[in-house]
Structure formats: C-alpha cells, structure tokens
Length: 216
Image (cartoon, rainbow, N blue to C red; front, side, top):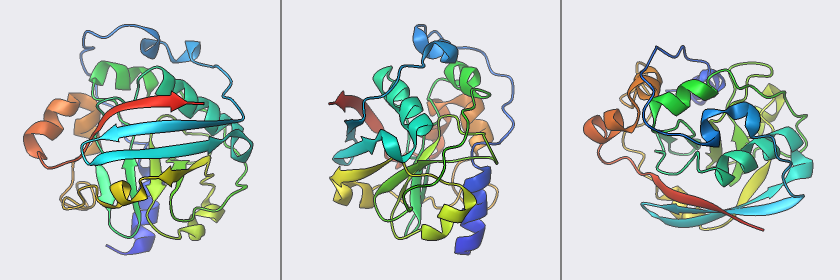
C-alpha cells in the first residue's frame, strides 16, 4: 500500500459506520461523553503500560487545546485501558483508541470535537487525533513513527509527543499491517461492534495497553 493511500485511510479511520451493538456492563462517566469536559493542565504526562513495555507521552495543551482536553479526559477516566494497537504500519504510524467495550464505543461515536489549528508538525514521536474530515475527532489517535509532516496540511494537529520509551512504540507488533478490506488487519467496523473479543480471537499477536495514568 502506498504512503498516500495510508494517509487517506488515516483520514477515514474514525468515520466508519457503527453497527448496532448491545451495551456491555460498564458504567460511570465513560458512558456519558458530555460529562467529560475537564480542562487539561498546560502540561501533563501520560504513562502507558503496554504488553511491550512502558512509554510516556508529554502533552502540551497550547499545541492543540481541544485535542489535549479530550485526551486528558479519556485517559483520566480509563478509556484507553485494555485498548488494542489495532493499526500498526511500519514507517508510518500506530493507531489506537477504539474502546474494547462495544457499548462504550457506541457512546463516543458522535462525540466530536472541533478542530485545532496545526501548530506543531507530525514528526517522529508526536501524537495526533485521527479524523473523518473537518471537526470529526472523537477518540482515535495515532503516534508517528517517522517524519509525517505531509499530514500537517491535512489538518492533523499534534498535541503531544513521546518523551520516553519510543523504542517500545517502535516494537509494537506490525505484522497485521493495514486494516481490512485493504489489508490483512482487523475491520474497524467489526471492532466497533464486537470489541476486544474479536481481536483476541482473530489477531492474537496484537499488542495492547494495560493501563494509562496521568502524571502531572
């Protein structure tokens, strides 16, 4: 797959139709996106404990305030815990941010935030939200493996960067490649509908997040 096509797939990544799915037994604030609007600190760190090891992101709110606020609220309330790195394309980026519980995913499908101007470039180690077009950011994010500054003009606005453990990010399992139907990786539609059970069964080598915690 060409890099350009991968870029276009990234732009479409969070815009797949979500099929009706039964809500699983999970309660709390994650079931109500409208309640998660806390303003993020000017700077904070997010520690990712993963199946490959630990890496740390540092978020700078001034880079992309709306994105930083959304990410802060998702991390603080455990949205990314147990989530899979479902799209890993060597030399390009690693994407995650679909909750393992289909019921929670359904709640966030239309919880869009407005775009942020692009102040920082999508260079190696930076993190940005995936989109399906203008003002459609929800929960999916990606970390750049290399210099993807060509994404800047497409509106992808970095809000943080990996400050330790980039070797862990580099080591995330990439054997499944691009997602279905373009590649051999998982279907985002099925992931949204079936949750982690689908990935555990059909993509057992996929790496995952054990827990994310805020470090101020």
